[in-house]
Structure formats: structure tokens, C-alpha cells
Image (cartoon, rainbow, N blue to C red; front, side, top):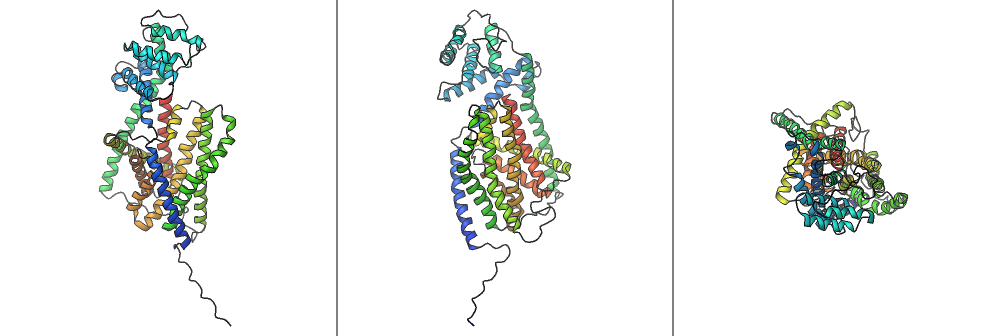
Amino acid sequence: MSPSAPRSEPRPPGAAAGWQVLLALLSLALSALLWVNGLVDSLERPSVGNALNVRQLQLELLAAPALPDAVRPWLTSGDPAAALAEALQAQVNAEAGPGDPDTLLQLALLEKDRGENATAAGLLQRLEQQVPPEQRPLLRRLEAAGAARPDADLSDPSAPWQPSLSPLTRQLLCADLRGGSCGDPVVQRQAALRLFGVSWLPALLLLLGVALLLREAWLLWRGRLPLLPLLGPQLNLVEVTLLIAGGFVVLGELTVPLVLAPLSQWLLSPLAAEPVRQQSLQVVLLYGGLMLPPLLILRAQLRASPGPGPEGGWLQWHWRPLPTALRRALGQWLMVLPLVALSGWLVERLLGDPGGSNPLLELVLTARDPLALAGFALTATVLAPLFEETLFRGVLLPVLGRHWGARSALLASALVFALAHLSLGELVPLLVLGLGLGWLRLRSGRLAPCVLMHALWNGLTFANLVLLAG
């Protein structure tokens, strides 16, 4: 008999094969290149901060007639009309095209009210080229300071001279043509409620969060905040690199959009006449496609894990009891709120506004279609929390914790979470948010509260944008 070939030793549990190591290193290098490029490119994206400031001032001016004199100083800035005129002028100067008609008319009316008749006349002449001929006589009357006021019915939206205007522009136009304070009282009262929702309500939540944060710090200092065992998938560092760098970044963020973007445009081509609704559905499809490769890889990795797994599964969802999960999520959300706000304020004071806001924020701020908003809400408050928490707090944090320890894993997983959003301007606030979500995972031993907290965070942002947009 010929001597038998030497038998290879079986790979010990948790060890990675050579091809896996090579593929992980290649995925990691490509991911680093893509993320660095994405972070640099984010500086070229406009910041949504300027648009939010304009919307806030517009809301203050629209709500002002409905606010009692004693309350108005607490809900509005010193002179919202002057501040809005300056902000709109900067916005108009930055626009390359002819400009938005409603913005031009709104700015012209504000400048005219301030006595800047020459500036207002120039804006109205610029606007005259964009409106139908039957609307131009009104603009010419507006150009003349002190002109006789027309007898047109301002409340009739079908009047031939009246373009499609925002409620604030209608209010300013009414005041200019008829004199005095006028406008729709119902719209003004609704604006006052929205103004409370975007100004005082967040301030009250911040105060409550500070109180809870101080209590948490006291308990931590007294050693009364024990961390629960950090259970998670039995993956090694190579496997988790393949999941995050290979599945999430290379396949999900790079490869899937190359295939799915043109396909989704073709599928949604019947909605070309409704671009906002088309964008919303495309966002849902692209995010769903991004999720698919890493989730399939994770499913295969969990199936290959040795043993039956711990009680509650490898990801430790533990949705029940749901009230406890909700309570933990709400408490941690309130505690993280002031920390993220402080970090964002410090970044802005030290570095200015670097831009790079998430493009989804601008889409939500300008959308008027309820179905489009529903699509954006589904992505922001359901899909993103479930997917991101599965990867970063369900897998990455416990795997790194087993190899590096809880503190290093907490910081590393939060940093990867922040980098994955590809926004250099929001990197520090997202890092703080990631630390808060990771701390909740360590304190609760469950993934469900992290998902709920993430959904609450995105939901508050979404609600704030909808309130500002009206």
C-alpha cells in the first residue's frame, strides 16, 4: 500500500481560513477608500442648517399675529422679519437660476416693508419674467411705493393674478395690499402650535434629559450601574470585517446601487410627473437593497455558529416585556439628547458649519406629498433602526467586546457607526449618539431598546422637519 497523504489538521473553532483573511483585508482597504472619499465629498454637500434657520424664521413671522404679547418674546427672535430678509437674501444670492418665485416675492415684500424700495423693485422685476402675463400688473403695482391698493379678493386662490404662494407670502401680500395685519387666523394658530413644537418642546426635553443624565452619572459614580453580560454571535474579527466591510460597504453601499438605481428608475418611471413621490419610493427600494447583502451574510454566519446559541438568540432581541424596552429606550434617548446637542454646538462654534447634511433631510423638509413623507418615514424610523442596530449593536459591539473588552468595543463600534453615515460635519454628534446606543446595549443586555431608541431619535428629527415645513 502506498503511504497515505498527510491529513490536514481541522481549523479550530473561531479561526479564519486564509482566503477569508485575504478577502477581509481587501474589503477593509476598499471600504476605507470609499469612506474617506465619501467623507471628503460630504463637505461639498450643502448644509440643511441654513434651510432650517429660514423655516424657523418664516414660522415665527407667520405665527406672530396669533401669539399673545406676553408669550411672543419667548417664542420668537428679536426681529424675525429683518432676520428672515437677510437669510432669504443670502439664499437668493447663492442660487444660480432665476430663483424660486415664492421666495422672490416674499423677500420683495419684506424689503418693501423695511423701506428698501429699490431692492424690492429689482426683485419684483426679476420675478416678473417668471409669472404669466395676467399676474404682472399686480407686480407692477407692488413696485410702486404707496400705490393704490387693488380691490382683488385676496382670499380667492383662483384669482387670475395670484400665483401658488406659501401661507406666509399670502400674509405678507395681504398686509402690503390692504394695510395693517391680516392673514388666516386658523393658519396662524396652527403655526403657533408648530412653533411651540419646534422650540419649547425640545428645550423641555433637554432639561429633562440633563436631569436624567445627572442621575445616571451619580449612580455610575456610586457603582450602582452594573453592566450585563454582552452576549452576541460567536464570530471572529475576520468574519465581522467581512460582514461590515464586505457585506455592508462593498456589496451594500457600492455594488447594489449600481444595479438597483437604474432598475428602480425604470420601475418608477410612471411616477415621473410626481418626482417627490418617485424619490421617496426610490429611497425605500435602495435602502432595502443595501440591507440585503449584509443580512444574508449574517444569516449564513449565524447558521454556521457552533452550538444552539444562548437563550434569546445570538442577537439578543428580547422584545418582551415591551413596556420595559420602551422605558429604557425613552430614558436613554432623553439622556443622549443634551449630549448630542452640546457636541453639535461645540463643533459649530469651533469649526463653523462644515455642511454635509444627510440629503434625506432636505427631501423631507421640502416634500408636500403625504405618500412621499410616508416613504421617508418608513426608511428613517423603521428600516434604518432595525438594520443599523442589528449590525452595530447586535453584532459588532458584542464581537469586539469579546476580543477587546467592553470599553474599547463601545468606542470602536460607535466610531464605525458614525463613519458609516459619510458626513464629516455630523461625525462628532453621530459618535456621541453611537456611544449612547452602545451604552444602552451594555446596560440592558437587549437589542430591542436600542432599536426603539434609534427609532425615537430619527422620529424626533423627522417630526421636527415636518413641523418646520408645515
